[in-house]
Each structure stands twice: as C-alpha cells, then as structure tokens.
Length: 194
Image (cartoon, rainbow, N blue to C red; front, side, top):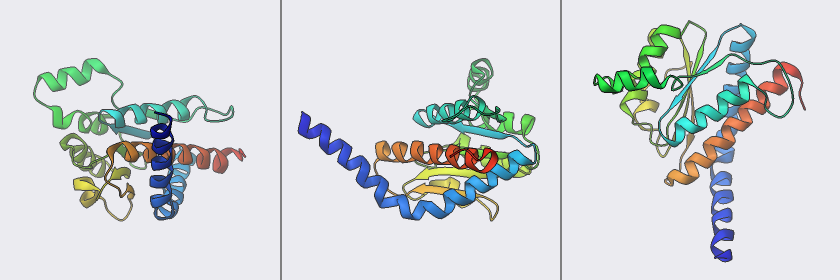
C-alpha cells in the first residue's frame, strides 16, 4: 500500500510537470485578464459539472473570502449555487441551458466566464460559452485531453488552459493547481501580496 501511495504522488507530480511549461503563458494571460476585469469593476462567473463544479466552488470561495492573506472580497459568482433554479431547469428538460440562462441574466460586457471541464464536451458548457459570447464576456476555459468542443468555440479574446493528458484525475489535480495559481497572481497583481 505505501508503495502505491508513493506512486500516486509521483504520477501527480509527473502530470503537472508534463503540462506545466505549456500552461505558463496562458496562465499569465488569464491572470492579467482577470485582474483587469476586476480593476474595471467587472465580475467573474464560474461554472463546471461534477468534480469541476467543486473546483468552481473552491475558486469562488478563494475570491470572495481570501486566498492566502486577508484582502477585500472580489466579485465572483458560482453559477451552480442556486439548487432551486438548477433543479427547475433540469426538471423542465433545459439541462443544456442550466448555465446559459444565468449568464444571460447576470453577465455584462467585460465580465469573465471561467468554465471548468475535464472533457470540454458537456452540452451545458457549450451553451454557456455561446451565451457568454452573446453577452460580451471573455472566457477562460480549463479543459483536458484535446480541449473538446469548448476549445473550438473560443475566440481570440478567450484563453484555454488545457491539461493535455488523458487521466481525468490528473486533469482535475492540474485544474486545481491552475486555479490556485490564478488566485495567487490576482492577489499579487491587485494587492501586492507576496
């Protein structure tokens, strides 16, 4: 068992190192986009399904509360936070619109949508990307494998942070690290936090 545990740690580290260099430049661009949106008094909308939804909640909590050090709260909304609305839309067979509808209601030009998906193929996230573009939002997509359908929808103002590996578990681990990197870079840029 201990050997297997060590191997799991090793696999995680190796996966991060495998994609780390490729993600450096787009992570920097994403952090700059988010910092500028926040300086312009815009907000960050975040969504994902399953494990990716949990990662979305982690990011929003870090922005609303704090990351490593105390600082003012930053405007971020987890789009899955209203269970009543979510279950109503799913019940009415509008699952593909579960994120698009709140984006249309809440999104304003200059806001940023962060979408998290290990496959990049979920229909509700594809619809969310379309709605975001209709409302003038920029998109930061955290994807895996080949980026899926979402990557083909991104335009020149959008950023794809693609963990180009095939293990869903490793993709989620890399996405969490990317989100923490973004939090660190935002805090450093806006507040000079070291």
